[in-house]
Image (cartoon, rainbow, N blue to C red; front, side, top):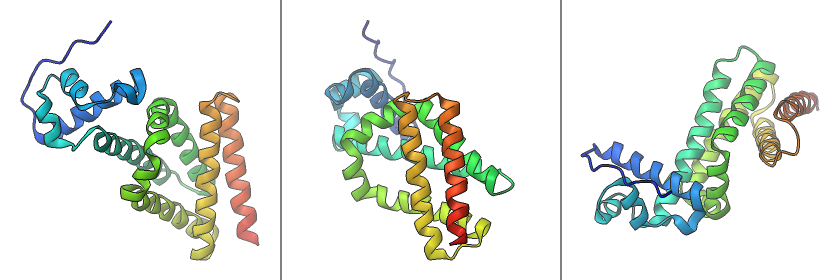
Length: 198
């Protein structure tokens, strides 16, 4: 059954942008990029085709912003969870847990977007966003383990890559979530502590 278009309503610019991004997410999850076009987004959102173009140049620009929003949400939630933790072990566990939670909730959408948009996203907003996230983890490693800033930056990149690999394995359901989480936490904690001693 095809979803009915939403009733037309006047929204503030930020709310309309959010609505168009949400509709694009729905379409991508339903049928991938073959379903994502400005006409379909406008129809589903209950707005004129021209209004969609007032916010996004085309469907690719819409997808790029959607991907940036999803990655930003992922990183923001991880950083907030880590900030609430009391020590190194708790920070690693909180970061891994939150990362896997977001992947469980939003991984299908992130995966669809990543397959097509990652390179272009990284060339635009992604480099800055990833850099900020790596700097966040480098600061944690530097302060928690007493590692020099340059080494902390390298370890942060390794830690983030390892957690991402665990999340991908979980998304493919190679291992149960609890097992993935525990392996990832132990690997990150042990690897970082061992590297800090070197």
